[in-house]
Amino acid sequence: MELDWSWRFAWEILPDLLAGALKTLAAVGIGYSMAIVGGLILALLQRTRSRLLSAAVREFVEFIRSTPLLLQIYFVFFVGPQFGVQLSPWASGLIAIGLYRSAYLSEIYRGGLEAVPAGQWEACTALNLSGRDAYFRIIIPQALPPATAGMGNALIAIFKDTPMLSAIGVAELMHAATVVGANSYRYLEPYTLVGLIFLLLSLPAAWVIRIFERWLRSKLGMV
Amino acid sequence: MSLWLFLVQYGSRYLSGSLVTASQFVLASLVTVVFAVTFGLLLLSKTYWLRAFAAAYIDFFRGSSLVVQIYWIFFVLPLLGLSLSPFIAGFLAVGLNTGAYGAEVVRGAILAVPKGQWEAAYALSMSPAKRMYRIIFPQAFLIMLPPWGNLLIDVLKGTALVSLIGLAELMFQAKQINNLTFLSAQAFGAALAIYYLLARFLITPAVRGLESRLRRKMSRT
Image (cartoon, rainbow over all chains, first blue to last red; front, side, top):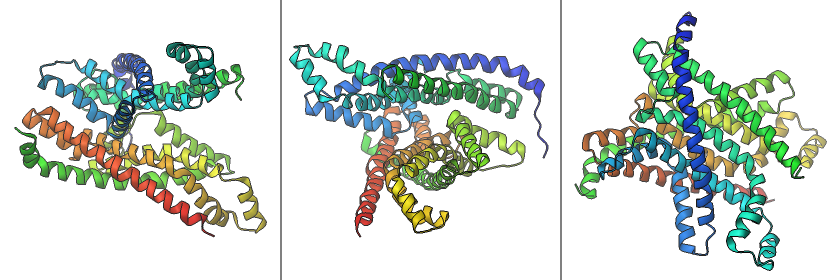
């Protein structure tokens, strides 16, 4: 069977897809900001003195990590109205993605925090630093560099999560392709272009993140 | 409707959905393992073209989204003359995707086997193939098991996306029940609970159990 690829059609639908891609990037930016902060909160909650709280947060993180994101998106989107809270597709989708990746990032932060030598904590105590100063001025700055690789991967992972938003009608890249396909009964060009756009964005991003990580490590004298 | 009544009425749908999910999981896991091992070994090949081919496969599947890959395999491959049912397209896409992640795990684990083991196998004049499957791979297998626990959970979560092309697995049934009853918390909550139980109390313990069994077996002289 011959390949029925039409360059003219591909060119025609490209603006629609690029508009969708911009919305995807917006979703990535917002979702990632939420996950960066949410992950830190989840990581710090697991280090509190209360055994019960940290065990509960630990189990919550495991729960989020072992269930499908698409199901979580549906849950947030549909359960709100049942109790009288109406959330837009954008809001519920981003809440779900932000929470999902928060759970992953909390594990990455946790690894970074555990890698800080105990002597640093003892020095904080010896210098009479408050818990807040100890965390924000001494511990977290040292915990971040080992976490950069994981944080970069999380950014790309969120990018690849965003097509699931199309399932609740967020008009991002995948949704734009599905609309174009449904209107023209042609799926070859839209879905192929979506795949290409994904590759063209995520492969260079992965490359930049690797270079940044290497630069940061050499800058901080870690080989 | 009480939760009990809800479960009595819709339990059979959840059960049939779970069975489809379980079969998708088993088949996608097999595809994942085969592709991960094959391409992990190809990444270590001495031939440049084989390495480049493996790297291209990995970049291709890791660089784009699983949703896009499922749609592409289901909607575009038929235009190229290969029509697959949602069931087959589903586990193939999930397996190919996770296999790309697994290939890196396999490669890393093989490289983590101590140099002395390679040298000892060489000193005993084993053929490269025998060295790999008798000496190196069994040790690498033990090293790669913990990350495989996470990969298998990714496979399970990946199968939920196959609902998007209409396969009546667990996620799909939850969506249907939600459309019928508008009891979203119950409909999706029950599905979340099933996925959680499968991942946390079946897959993770199974991989841990396999790991401790192999560790005992391999330390016995």
